[in-house]
Image (tube, rainbow, N blue to C red):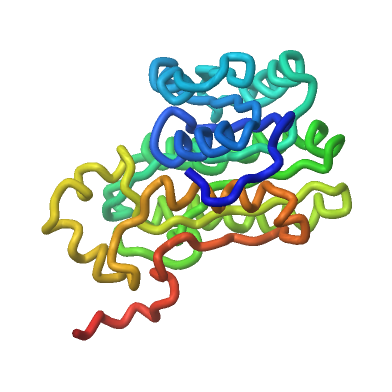
Length: 258
């Protein structure tokens, strides 16, 4: 999963959205670097699939809706009771919706907000005391859609811009407490959420046309960067929203002229 190895032995890592896609890749990467990993998601079967190949004494799966106001505090308390400390939090769970804003219903908007930003708020709030004790770190999953705009994605982009701003401001507030806060910002990545597009070569063309490396991202592209940001090698990095986008955000948006 990673070319480098990191000293995560005896470190406890909590990851939301760990049952599939980017979250699963991040969980496996930490486990392969000897961390103890707690993953959160709504589907226990998927969480168990993520952890199936790893030692039970270094894993824990919790099926909860992390966007519920009380869930984060209860989860952090359970992690501390089981393992005694919490060193890294990866807020990765996400939701997506697109379409004209005038057609977006309240339920969809509230779902985007609850999963993409409310869950991060509650988790950061609940985890801070534990992270402060160990000079820990929080890494959130934002998006290149949290850096600029996209057609037909105003609501989704708004939530991801919120994630990016939250991370930058929290880094200022928590730096003096020894806690680093960063985010990764993937572009189009092949996951269950993008399977419909990824499975159609014709639909993939406009996405790949925007990517200088000429291929979509994969979860395995994202996970090593999260490990780096959580590692001692990134000890002087905080407040960063790091694009992992194959060069997508390097463009001004002008068409790709052959």
